[in-house]
Length: 453
Image 1 (tube, rainbow, N blue to C red):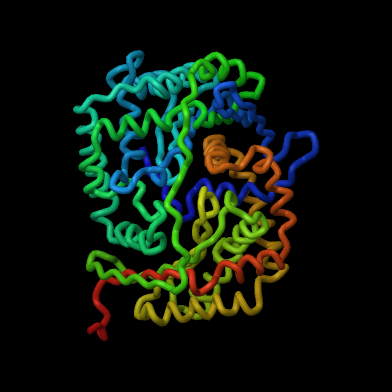
Image 2 (spheres, rainbow, N blue to C red):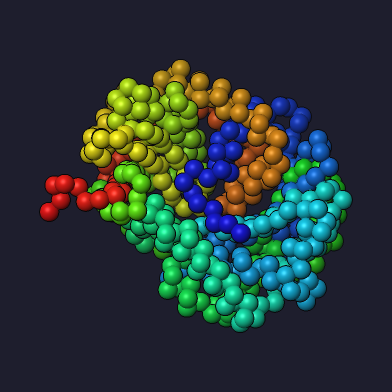
């Protein structure tokens, strides 16, 4: 069971790679995905790939940590753990045992905007895992003892992955400095005190209000067609009644009018590091030309060892051992465009930051070039060959975008959209987003600087 972290997530990287494959007339688009919606509101997508007799079956819920209430952080992730405890039909943790006994692998993950559950199995076991997943959509049984057991597991997970990791603690604080009010500023795993105070009733209320077919997306990729998936979905999922869903209302982030700066000193840090982010629209919030432009921009700046930032800060200036940029374009609400720099030995953070700012200033003044954009597009198209070999990654990519409101038609049409991105659009996106008033800088230091008061 994992937490999806938004800093260059794998599904976004795969998504960027997939953008450049031209849609061929008659083949259904990028991957030939087809969709339908059951009468109870459950969306379903089939992404066919007949090369091997396996499928990845996923159910995504439009419910993540950003849908939690203040003081109740961590409930989405804790519920994800508890979903493996069982139902009347599969009690005592039998879910995982049954999947494993049938040669499959399974897991789950929690993000800010969704929670997902998946199994990869042989094609002839698809019906089995669909029945198991449908059963726990409404039949979950949780005792107080179950809650206490998984609470301890989650608290230990937090201690290991966050509290004992200076970089993770810094990331948590840096995110909170970025989003002062919006729940994107909360940790997906939850705050310790909130996790300790969550009750069985809190968890089941979140489950009953959000785990329902009309708040779910079924994605099956691999050895399956939409005509094969539809009758299974109708028989297995269509019988589950929908619920009345509350609007996904989230606190709105106040307009940022001045840059912010966070400095954390932690002697456990191996070396200094610097991060810088700016508020940015996503594909869900638009406009589309800005989101597509930012995807290209991030790859121009950071896509390889010949990228602008690596060449400028590591090779030419020698002020960093690594440097790059990223774009979080897969959120339901406004996200971030960010930079990172790890200063070289003997180089002060201030010097590395000044060099990064010089690169940004040159970008804003001169812009990216036709050659840079063309090379990025070619590289993405080349990488697509490898992306096609992992049906699980493809399923995760579709599910993540569908969960934040994009349609199958939009995803299938991305290739043509990105192929049409112009240099002018990339430069316009950079100048729009890299605005000083939305800047947040974070510095992690292993010790106090020599001139500190």
